[in-house]
Image 1 (tube, rainbow, N blue to C red):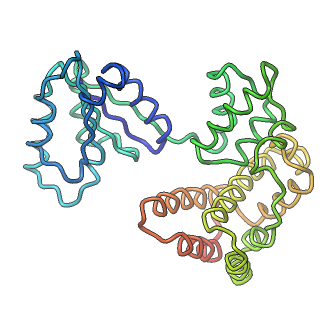
Image 2: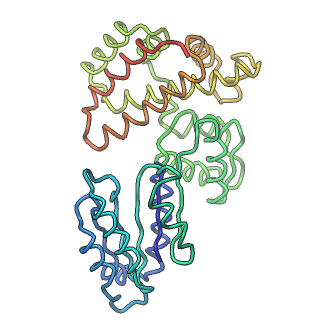
Image 3: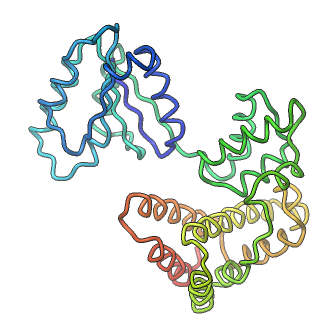
Length: 322
């Protein structure tokens, strides 16, 4: 059986992969029958050999290939050899192809697998959009036997964008509540990211598109010992809150009403609403996507963290109204 997992939601990709590992057997069986290959480097012949090997003291063997379509300068004949290797996967092997980005609907691999539904399965794992994240929080809480009030789910989703970290906090808060709904007060008490942050100068300067002041604030904070990734996370949170606030304001809510819905302190809600005025919803969505791309570039070592921060700040000042 062949599986294709694609999308940016790494948390749920790893959970799906963990389920397939369980089909191989216990930890001992997995150690002998699970192999992970770098798709950017292996050849089709190496892939076929890995899949053809018989399971050892187990009924299934799991082969995981990451990033085949991320490799550069693939030749047409190489792609054809790859498809032949896929067609030769035996019933005793579970082959999982992982692409940590969404593939276009007309991608040749998607078409190839769609024609072989009896032996292939495609699973798409996109990131939940910002407006859907509170519902994602509530669904995950239900999975762990807990519940969140809508205000608490919005408050937590506004604080954390990394799904792994968000999932950890959902587990912790659900256990803390011990059967009752998690409230915004629980989030404020137990989530460290909810503590007041005296870094408003940087975020306010970004909200006003004051690049010079924002860069000055950035470098002063770095000199004072703030970690670049902590500052990056703060900027992600700020733009996510501005996007959510802008959507509520355009629905006719007041800043106070929107802030209550998002689980924000009235002062913070007012400041975020003031910053959101300078941007349109399409702009904020574009900035949020840019931050996600920079986050990936930082994590994969393509861009130094400080350079990514400076790049984003400059882009905010240069972006024209949409």
